[in-house]
Image (cartoon, rainbow, N blue to C red; front, side, top):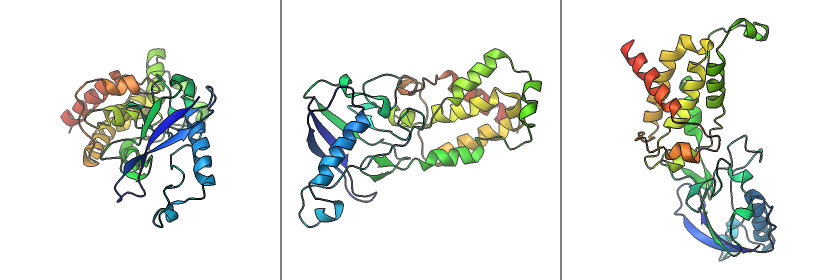
Length: 259
């Protein structure tokens, strides 16, 4: 399979970005999207051009920078906007789980970084998602003593609540919800973190403080508001539902009334 890749290139956070077009040929249909980018980067490296040489007239701006780690759909690092969709045209997958058989032979594929004021571009397709870490640091944890491992079965939790908590905890923090939302809202991410703890007895002692602190930090970092378009739910690779946003709203209102 052959493809034309229209890729966003940006030397650094302060530089003006632009699209560059590349051709890759003889790509097997079962090649993953990241493996295809690896092949492209090998071609770019073999041309002998690097980012420093660009200033000296080289037409090649060097290998494309992109985030990746586990390549198993677990870490959420491989966050790319592909042909107008977060993580590409397949459903409920991360970019590393996307395969080239989902594209037509000869297609032109547009690859961009996440577009959000809260996720500034570092270089090319790499963005700074440190805002998510700051939200978690604001309250996405349990600091009270909850007992040791052997005490876990002494606290009975209804099956329905345990399953709902695990579903919320499946969030990998990739940021697809933010990139997809027309408002750049992080509500689904925050809701998944709040919901996963709010459903468990271990999370109840700090529930009010957690909801207030995480929502306040989200607003402070410049994320937009939720207007219930449900685009976040549609593009979430782990299918986190907006039911958790409803629970976050309840937790936040309860926290405000309890002040």
